[in-house]
Length: 251
Image (cartoon, rainbow, N blue to C red; front, side):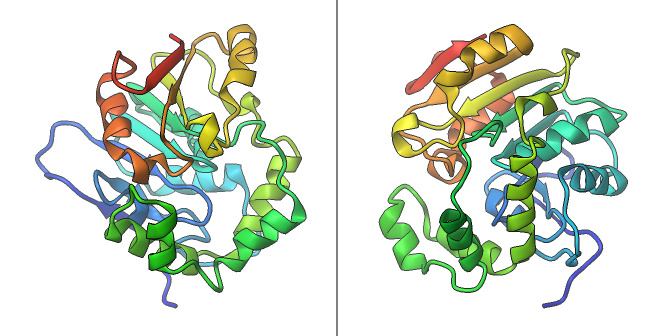
């Protein structure tokens, strides 16, 4: 597959007075944000060249080296949240708001079998039909770009990101200190296999990161950007507020 030094998908009006940066997770690419997006591919994903080593800090530096101008809003999902937290100190123009969607901070370790299953999706991804059957809220476009993102992902990056998590490189310690940027963790529904153990981390946030806000979106899975893209857009634009299905744990 042809690769490039840098690849980014951009949607919306070039004349817009504000810009948003959206960073994908592992086993994904910038295409998964197709609804509202200025979305780069991380190394080892999408159209970007393959490497022998992938690290969270390396991906953050990669973005810092290639992104031009500043962003008013930044959002990310899953593993991408560790990348943007490492990216924030490298940006001259800090965003007004950072939304971390179901991040992997201090997540329950995956078994070797679970990791192997994820890696297998880069070679034999789930069909669009099966994806739609398992995720009735998804659109056909969601299923198509998910499958494309899976096959365009370097399997090496999956294993190395989980190794980084096991070394503590994806813990809450990556959260930036208090600054002018509002930081919101938007967790998925625990009943739908949320990766972020929101209720277990309330005290930790209160004691170590009191500037970080936390909410749970009911009926949203780890793939919230596909299940409920409108929720992420609303939180990015307006922050946390009273709306159906949003349980606010920290403000």
